Length: 456
Ligand code: TRP
Image (cartoon, rainbow, N blue to C red):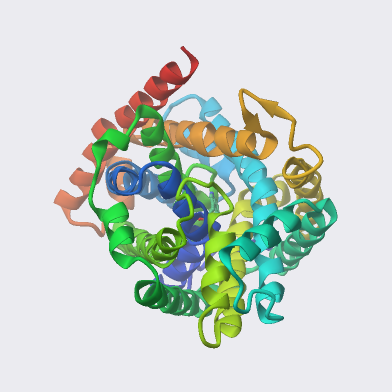
């Protein structure tokens, strides 16, 4: 037996709560705070939020359940799982392409994820040492651009982040990831709430509420719909095989849809709180909501720098964001580590080390795209933006679509019902129909129409 992520493959998760905690740990990360806020800012706030929520419940949650159910059925690494399940269903074994595509997407995501997570690590120190005490928003902005202009700073912190991932991944991470999620999540919620309360007191709360909750559908284009869809997959960690690996360790006799609904709600809660924390400051400071990836790294330090005990709260906040990023990063690496060690019998540590090195090299593209390679672009997208676009807006929806078609249309219904024996028949039917008739066609439609519109 391979030593694996959750170690106790035969027994599965100790309890339903360990499964929920670890899955939440994988789901909640930079996507909720950093990416959600700048995407909402760029895509018209409330209209984006509504599209995002619709995508989460109608499209992403059914696919997430399908991915976990695949893991439950296969109880092995992603490639072997899909291969075996396909054979059982008398379908082509080439469906295992889903697994390879997913592993590729996961490594590409981790390459830029590690750079941004490095920023978050760097900001723990910056806040703790009081760099932003009583800072103006200009100072916070200049400090951020100065930081980005130094390749060495970015590479240094990216390396620290990847070293942490490596350590955790090598040690088998089962207890680590669930425990870290249990500690970090409440603290992350606490520090986000503190910032939201501060934002409403000192910033422009009503403007933030209007921006986030009063929909203006003129802002919603086919492209922002694709971004909302891609972000639903990104934020819930679907489409790369990570949920499949988690499913392969899920406890028996528990309701998958029930457990995953909790994960989805927690994920949404953190994103909403992050929006409520950031946007009051953004509007009070007259920052442009659409300024892009720097939004959180300018608005948050400013906010913390100007509140009482803010340097401690701020350091704690960036620490929790970093911890959340570590648990997500380990989960991003897991499908491939799991596959390499099961398929080739490699030591887990060796697989993880090799992959982390590969990701580190790939990550240089992102780190340098903010400074010496800032001019390198394709269709107006920098290297970082290109990686983000290809993964979140192409590979994840394609992966999700393939999972929906494979599980919804290729597997026999009795087999699925068998995996779902604990769920109420109506709930099973609801999921099954959503997957077949809503998730799969919606992804296809959004993907094709937005690509068509952006290239023609
Ligand atoms: N959901 C993670 C976040 O919000 C990022 C992520 C995307 C991820 N795809 C993943 C994490 C797959 C684990 C596995 O930060």
